[in-house]
Image 1 (tube, one colour):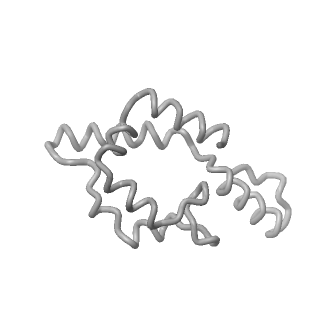
Image 2 (cartoon, one colour):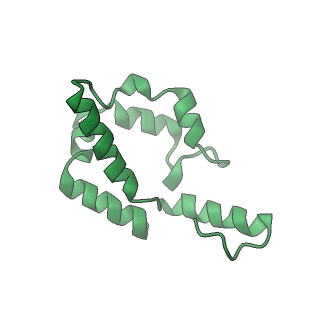
Length: 107
């Protein structure tokens, strides 16, 4: 989040809240996801394990409003990751391009 024009705590908090609510994120997250998945595959391991999405891992990403970026409740993330059909869809290159577009331009 650009903060060069924020001169006080209130303006920075507002900027962060707006960024989280818009769902914008760094589209490089998708590339990093693909890289880690490839590395796990090369090792013969499964990259995404629903049990790996611990409460501590989710809590680290939760904002002051109690949600993840885009307003998603933490419990919803755990449900989504445990859905094999959805996880397969997230790995589709066309879907990843759409995700990158939403991350950079918002919902």
